[in-house]
Image (cartoon, rainbow, N blue to C red; front, side, top):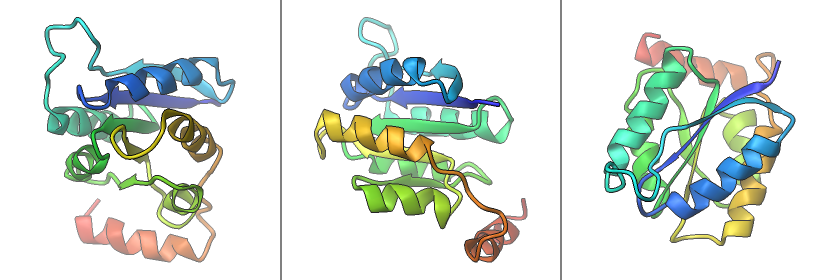
Length: 154
């Protein structure tokens, strides 16, 4: 079964969102791509990053998607917003090792990046890499992730 992926951004990350969105639509690992905006020309183009991060987190929490890749200027704002949703683990990562560990060590469902921080080709590559990782519930990291889950009361 393929991944149901959300892609979203605020106006500071829309260009990278559009690139990753196009890549995701062509990726055979992706079963469904959900664009939660923003999009140039839309009335909501200036929608602030908290709404994007929270919307993605809620959709994952409610079972409408499996993962999300979000962009803003730094990646930090959308990560903070998504992490406010109970049960969601979002991480900002701008290098391959952190992208890998976000999933393998932390069972991260949301990857965030900053359009004002890294180049578009690196963002595209990191998104592709991140989608290739799966959390191993039998790994040594599973007990650590469980501590977070227990703390939240999920």
